[in-house]
Length: 285
Ligand code: PMP
Image 1 (cartoon, rainbow, N blue to C red):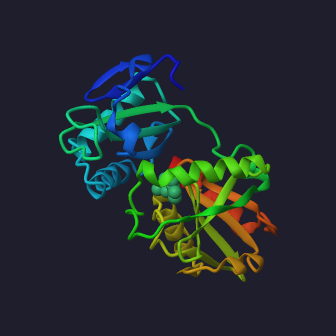
Image 2: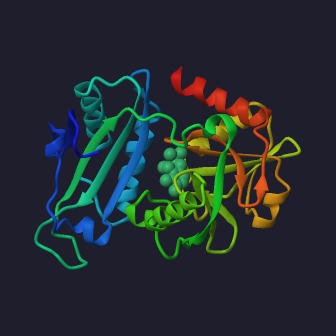
């Protein structure tokens, strides 16, 4: 991704894509002092743009890393990147991190917090899974307790076990991994929330140790508007055997049907298809 034409916004300026580099002694590279957002631009408009910018600032606060920009300034930066790269449908990545500076130990209070915005065309996150349902492995790692790390921050450190779990999943021919949390409850995928259908009701994990995704919140609203009963609750892994349908939600993943998790299979059923189509209509409206 580093060798491309285009413009990236970095610390207040649009610069050439290939020049958007950081020093090797960047604090974030050593200690994961980084927070980010993943968003999608549809027909020239970023879906839930302000909510993403607000979450970025909150993630920064939770990681004791105040980001020196306002929501309006982040919005303007994203808009500048979309325009400079002539994009209509794209993925937007905003990242803020502790740079190189006075400190090279764990403390970083004297190092600047920096920010960048990049955007590029990115198709379906799970390839052709939208049609036939994604195959998921069950991760051997567990989502951590909110007493271990701020689990509602979208922070780089929370993704170490995501990358490891996704590699293990891919080695088994799966496109993602589903995590249990530190208590053993069903949690989330490596970059998406999870929903299940049983007897026309929908069940999804409580967001008490996972990212309460913006897409998750949108989809719950859509389901309730349709009159579907949504149970936000703790879900045991044994229950996977009883669920009929399953899908993932995320800004990148959108609504992706799941066909298999470990040994359990699910049909890509009517409600899954309906919600995927409704979401597609909503983001483009
Ligand atoms: N969980 C994790 C771990 C994620 O990385 C994401 C993607 N941001 C989500 C859930 C879904 O969040 P959202 O719908 O806000 O993109």
